[in-house]
Image (cartoon, rainbow, N blue to C red; front, side, top):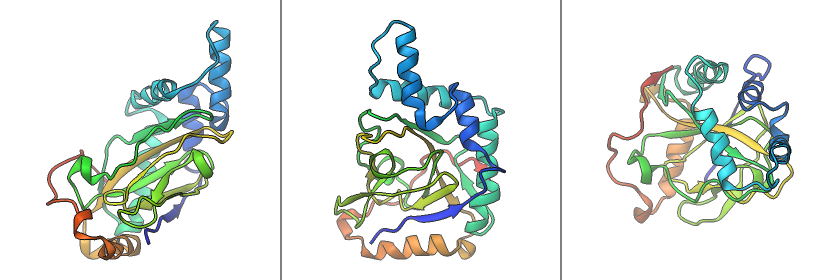
Length: 229
């Protein structure tokens, strides 16, 4: 069975949600859909939200400069919280992938395995929600490799979720909750395989249950892991 692993952090020291809310110009991320509907009404538009609205807000976050507080906090999170759990030194995405999934909008991610995009088996995936997630507003991951038996991965703001995104299919459902979700995710590799930590050991050991047809090919250069922590 595929397991998600949780690494907690102090949101007072690393207030990612506040920085993301500031970047999006809202007071509360969980009420982002309400704020966007009000903005549309004020501009004379129809207060309906869809996939394109999520992409528009996601693009705003992706365009933030490296010196923005949200990206500064991201790098601190990786170096101060994630890296110590994986031997103290990792290579990771210099720029994370941001996700916006407002309440009442369709899925923002089709079912996929990261290895089918990157060609890399050695990447681990970290998912960092900026709100408490539950049911259909969060990440869904299959419970057994290749079974497509997807279940939600509940997580609280202040938790980094580590899982085998390379080979476990994952994605999202339509957000039928009242809570909008903003999150980031990134891929990383422990630099020293001899000191990669208990979480990495557990994930790699779990791959023994993968059938030959579910394994990806030989790792090849893929996503940019230019940052080190």
